[in-house]
Image 1 (cartoon, rainbow, N blue to C red):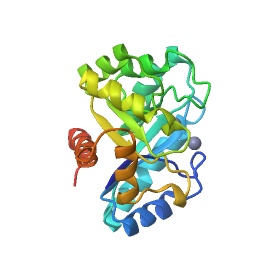
Image 2 (image 1 turned 135 degrees about the horizontal axis):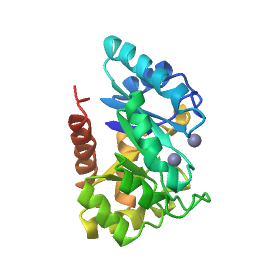
Image 3 (image 1 turned 45 degrees about the vertical axis):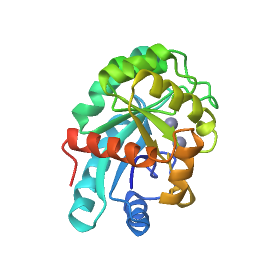
Image 4 (image 1 turned 180 degrees about the vertical axis):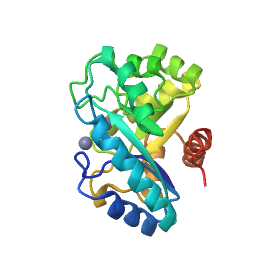
Length: 218
Ligand SMILES: [Zn+2]
Ligand SMILES: [Zn+2]
């Protein structure tokens, strides 16, 4: 299993990166993306620390740890600049907190993230066909979310992605130990989105391909 969207106590997660990763090792994960919430206030604080702990953890245990961020509630006009800054600071995966149906995310956030070339557009809510087509063109993965609330629109995201030919990825958006998905639960989330039985391994393969692309595959 791979989970590219998790939170630690460097934002609003409950666990230190080391405990999160140890718990994921115990569940049989092969790779994890640490994607704490950032905006202009904390990007330069969070990223170097996640980079450091990822380097250390990658020497000492089995789960491949990838430092990233989740740009969250950033004004759309500023997303492009912060994506570039996050990469300069060492974030290997840039996730964008998309237009989930359960929060007042600024309209235009999905589009700004796609234009900026994020790696994963998380919980993109009622994503439009145009934006799904842009994700397909740019190879940006759309997220099927295991998180309560964000997952309300999984069926719509799955449908838009299929129609546009965009890649999908399954993430937990975990903030606490109980949020980490077992393989069985992940399969049910994917099937529940209407994607059918074979899709779970397809989504896992998409996550693996992204890790290969950014040079973080084992
Ligand atoms: Zn959060
Ligand atoms: Zn989010």
